[in-house]
Image 1: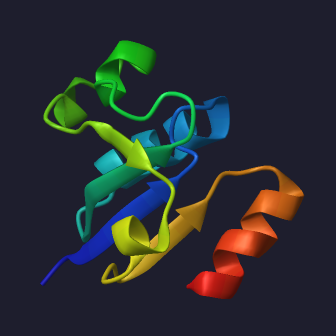
Image 2: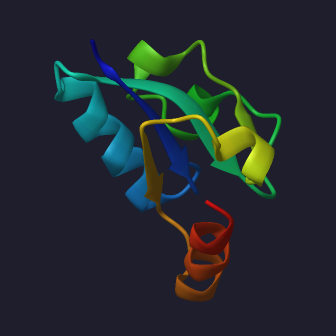
Length: 88
């Protein structure tokens, strides 16, 4: 059984690198990618080199979109990461 993964802040450089690493891991499935200003866009519009995730759209970074995952990576600015960690 693979772990369900979310990346909060997936529109940025670190989020893209995390997605690349997840894609290479046999026991991880990236199911949710979040962003703030880029919510609603296709993930691959920002990271075209990650074609394996062409099915994913960026959604808002909210508790509702992040709960229920086995792993949530926080690729956000420090203060925002602390805020998101508090509601997880």
